[in-house]
View 1 (cartoon, rainbow, N blue to C red):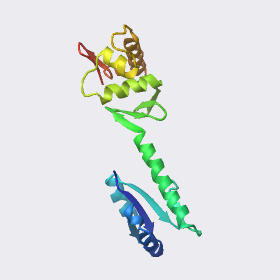
View 2: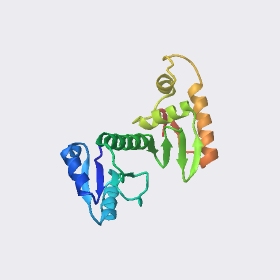
View 3: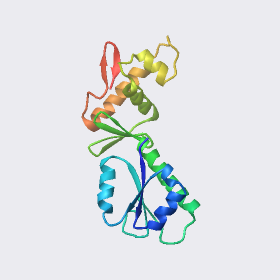
View 4: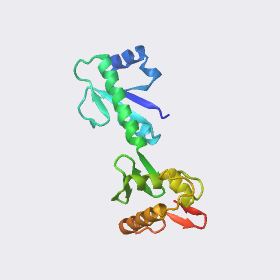
Length: 187
C-alpha cells in the first residue's frame, strides 16, 4: 500500500497533538515551515498520496483541509480518512490498458482526450482479455464473461468483439486493439 502523508503547514501544536494521538502509526506526518512546495513536489514525484492540514486558504481544496476554526479531533480524523478513501477509490477505478486509460466507474475508454462510452459487457470483455496472460478462445470468453456453459453454440463472443472493434476503429482509428489469431483473442 502507498504511504499516506499528512503535511502539517506551520502548526507545531497540531503536529505534536497528532503524534500524541498516534496518527503517525497510520500516516506519515510531516511538519513544514517555509518549503512546503518542495516537500509536496518530492511526495508527488514518489507517487505518494498526501493531504495538507493548514490554517491558510491558499491551497487547492482538493488536497487540503482547512483548520482555521476549532475542530474536534474525531471530526478531523473522519475528514482525513474520508479524503484518503475517496482518493483510493478514484485511483483504483482508473487503469491503463496499453495506450488507453479506462475509467471503471464511468465505463469510458480514453485516448488522447477522445472518449468512448463502453457497455458493461464490453468493459468486462476488455478487462477479461487484458488480465489474461495468453490468448483466450471464444469458448473461454463465453464461459467467463457471459457465464455460458461449455458446449453451448453461440456467436455472442464474435458479435460483441466485432461491434467493439468497430467502435474502437471509428473513435480511435485503431484496428489492433483486440487481436485475433487461431488460438483466440488478446489485447
